[in-house]
Each structure stands twice: as C-alpha cells, then as structure tokens.
Length: 179
Image (cartoon, rainbow, N blue to C red; front, side, top):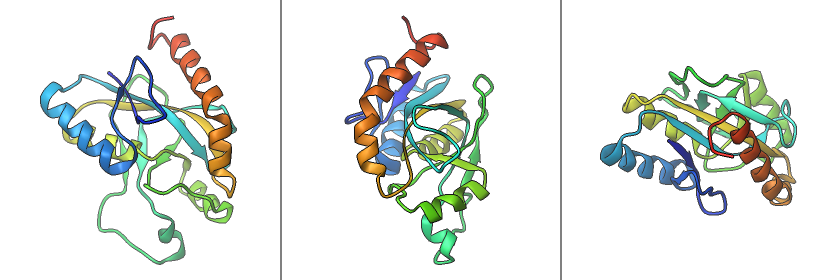
C-alpha cells in the first residue's frame, strides 16, 4: 500500500494519512486496525540538512524524532527516538527526522548530519512507529523540495509542484505505480 501525508500532498494512487506526527499516527493506526496492509511505502517531500540536493530522490527505512532543543542541551527524552524498520525492498539512503516543526536554522541543521540524519519529513517517524507495532514492513520515498534554512517554506512552495511530478516519474520507473 502506498500512503502520503495529505492536504496539498496527495496522489490518486496513495492513501492520505494526515500531516504531522499526530494526524498521521492516528489515521495510520486506524487503517491498520480495520484494514491492515502487508507493506507500506510512504511517498512525499522532504527538507535536506545539506547532503541532498533539491529534487534528489531519497529512499529510507530509518526514522528519528529529534527536536532542535536536543542539540542545545535544552531537552532529553526517555524514549527510543530512532527506528530502523524491517524494509527489505528499498535502499536505505539516510535517516529521516520527523517533527511537527520545520527546521530553519542552518547551524542546527548541521547537527543532524553528525548523527547520520540527512532529511526531514513531518510524518515518517510516526508511520515507522505504528508499522513497528503492527509488524508491517515500511519504507519511504522522498523528494527534496528545500534545504532547512530561513528560505525553507518559500523554497518548498516554489519547488513543490515540480517535485511531485518528478516523484511520480520515479515511482513509475521503479514500477511501484502504473505508467
């Protein structure tokens, strides 16, 4: 099953789950309870911490939930905040960080790279957490729309439409959707 965030990032071949950690976790849990899929591929956009360029396609089966305050020693968590899923079909290019907030600090963006985290997407961590609970293999295919800097939102808006077309073309090439 192919899933996506929703709102302005929907596809005719994907089930929208909601934007952010909470909406996506609630809706994916409900989906799993009533119609458990055998396999999940999440598709969507991502911001790059610097190693990936605009319109790069990134595949991942690893997710993190690390907040910016962690890097300034202003927070801690007793929870496991990195998940490696049991995906066996897609490559694992990098760890995807998820938060309900978009990073706009170039300085703190560099901190993510030190932990092997390359991109951010608001939903992926919650999907991986729910998939782990239901023992469903999960992977993500992302297209970079912006860098995590002060221009993140403007660049996202500017690049989003073209990025979605490129992502669809990639999914067709991989034969995940019909041409």
